[in-house]
Length: 404
Image (cartoon, rainbow, N blue to C red; front, side, top):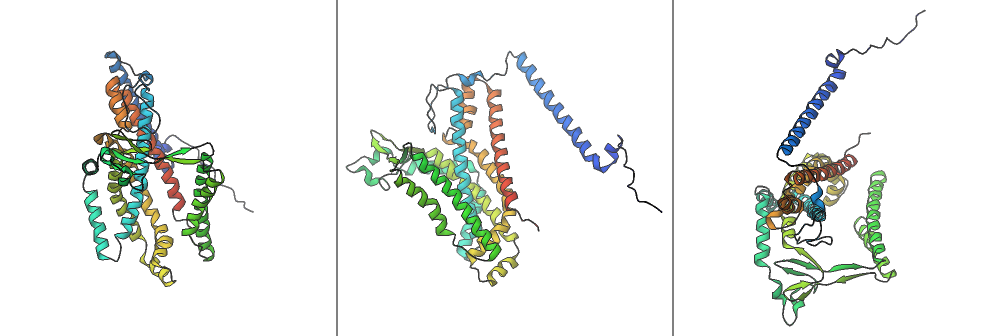
């Protein structure tokens, strides 16, 4: 009578690190890691020795000293007596603001242009092709300068709004478009106003949850729930109801002409608008090509099958084509978002004080701490890029096709 036994396990030997394919890749990766660490250590040691020989040392004490300069676009309170650290923080916020606005706008422009490039209308298709080829083949810096020049040369100065009825030249009596920028009403929050804002944010998540439920119900049962008006109602109605129930705790401060400039409200500098629009329309051209490629990668049989079921073209695009195309669109889209964030450093060309203009510009020149300032700049852009990549990769894993 015979019995079956497991074969004896092979003992590990050092030669397996090179001869066994199970360990060989790890061996080479470990060797490469050691070499990289050694190179970084050598460069760091060399830098420290050179600085010591020149009588210098790496120190960040300058961040606590008064900055001594003004910043034109201030999302938080700041004056010339604030520290270099606060000036750098203002620059960080300015960079994040323009990057966020440009990413959202570029995505909207890119998706619309990418879909219209495949339109059956010859004129629309060619116009989108002209847009894509014109904007992506001209450096973004040139577009920034063009838009900024147009704004400063064509829009009137604030004093042009002076007259018997200055509001007659303002849009809805609340918006003033000048060569110094755009003046908008400023929201003023009472203590309960933040509750209204919280309700509005919660309503956005509620709308997202409703759309996911409606999509899941459609895929599971074929029952189609309305998407448009319920989404708008979920977002707007709770916030409006809370606004009136809590006694209108949010008011608006309108810009008013005083002297040679407007007072009150919120001023959005022309440099911010020029940088925002230039980055959006420039990157939108690249995103349009990504969207077009993703849509064309979906089998035409999918569209024909959906049409045979009686779905309209708009629903075919939203429910059948785009969900499958996202797996192709998202990876290059991540690169475009990273490009927007890094290209925002061109803001100094139009005087917009982002992190490159504050920490990497005036602060660096005033303190002479070039190494410290550049290291902080590198750390900031590296951190932001890694965060964007991580968030978009999570979204990419959520929308990719899942096999049964």
